[in-house]
Length: 390
Image (cartoon, rainbow, N blue to C red; front, side, top):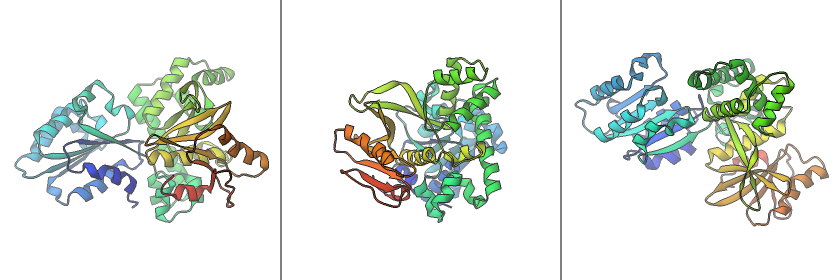
């Protein structure tokens, strides 16, 4: 088992504190395992631990918050000392916020909850725990985690970082079946059922269109034009709604364009990336045909898992793949497959001449040779991903 140290490090300061720990992220990205890892660190007294996975059929009666309240009350009765509550996929419980806040004020307890939707804390009911929680987002394995299991970058490139693949030893057929199942279950449970979508075929085609155009700039209007070209009528509003549902389920991550001179975010077009590039693999005939875009996706996931805010840089009609923000300082990253010719080198390095500041600027590729120049750092992608600080 890979210990999710980068997340544990973020959460540890809040162990046993009177604040609700909320962990959100893509389905099957490792939230349940992380809960168990937290439990092993905070207590060895199982009699004072209540851990419930609300997606288990055995817990179906507890999806009514009144029944859950009674169950928790019965568990806590007569116990002395701090209780530890771990509630997995809490969004399945109706009016869960009221119950969770009630436990916080009623019992001497330490509370951890998880959910698979980014809107978990944005509903009206979330006002019941406003100011009383701290939120964390978990992602599939970034490469810096993946390599802890002595797996190669080539394996990561081919299959992505969904944690369960490790138990399959990355056997090809089994891995493809699993990735397909993850894709289908997310669409079914987190999008179709949650939002009561009737046109399932349209949703599936839209998601596949975005996945196959991973890392490319487009808008709802351009998607509408694509569907029109294949004789499929769909409104811009429907497209915007479906994209929002995918974002809320953590399936897609849209990056806004930011003008590097004004620092303003632009309103036209976004670049969409997947939560894990492995989900795209079962959908295409030649998964590595767009290896440059896959490398971008890998770098983005690493940056997000390290807590960076990410945008796409725009300067005088040119693009910087990623502008990473942390502690009010930008770090610029260009990603390429290979710096195979002078034209490619000039494209990747040259854009930085238009950025008039002294913050770090990287060009990342699979080249083993160092092409660093003019204060711009070139790194092999594996070295870049393994570097602890950018």
